Structure formats: C-alpha cells, structure tokens
Length: 161
Image (cartoon, rainbow, N blue to C red; front, side, top):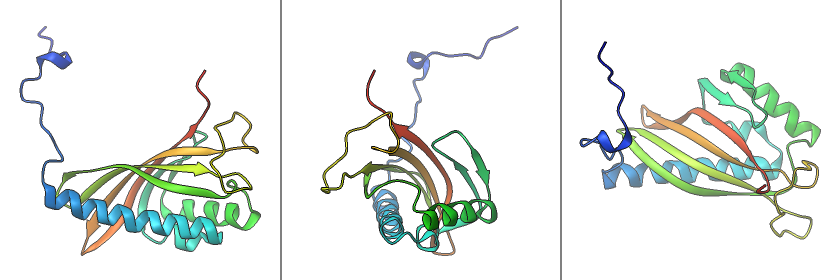
C-alpha cells in the first residue's frame, strides 16, 4: 500500500490562496460592512440587523459547541437572546484578519471583546457573567453582488492557563 501522507516540509507547491490584492480589498470591505452590522445589532439588541446578511443555508457553531444549520433555525435563537438581554455585556467587534482564497469568497477572523461598565476591555474570565469575549471565524460569499455569511464558528476567549 502506498502512503500519500506528507509532512509540511514535503509540500513544494503549497499555494498562497489569498494573493489577489483587488479580491482581498473587496473581501475586506465586505467583512468591514458585516462587522458594522454585527456591532450595530449587538448595541441595539437587534437580531434582524445582526443577521441581515446570513444566508438561508448558513452553518453556525456556537461558542458552547452547538451546531445550527440554516437561518430559519439560527435567527430565532439570536432573536430570543437579544430580547432576553442575554449574550453578554457591551462589546466591541474587531477584525483580526481577512483572506480572499477564491473569487467572491472572504474568510475572516473577528474578535468580540467584552467591555466592562466603564467601557474598558474586560479581562477574559472563566466567569461568563463577568466577561465573555469570543473569537469567530466567518465565511462570506458574494452572490449576485451581495455578500452573504455562509458559515460562522465562535470560540470563547478564556484566560491563559
């Protein structure tokens, strides 16, 4: 049996997927607009605004390990959290990085930083009531000139051990 397994050093043709400066600029602009919607939706407790550009067949991973498939399932969860006031304190969304690995595709890391009552960054904590920040990975796809969120995965930011 022949093994096709390789190590990182055995990949002489490893591509740089996000090499087109114009596509990266377009992807970065799309992510910036999406993050503005996330921020406004968070600040206004408005799931309709936060989820405005979620695709009908979105795949979503919650920060607690749940997997949700489709806008019809995800949006009511977000709406309920917004109405109940759950979902965390004031927060600031920050774009960490954006790639454009293919035409009309954006992959972005976005950090949501919890803020304290004074508006300052709350240090990561295992106590979710005190501080709940998270890192998200989003995939956006442009369809008919509109950028849609195809997938999102959220991971809590915890104090270093």
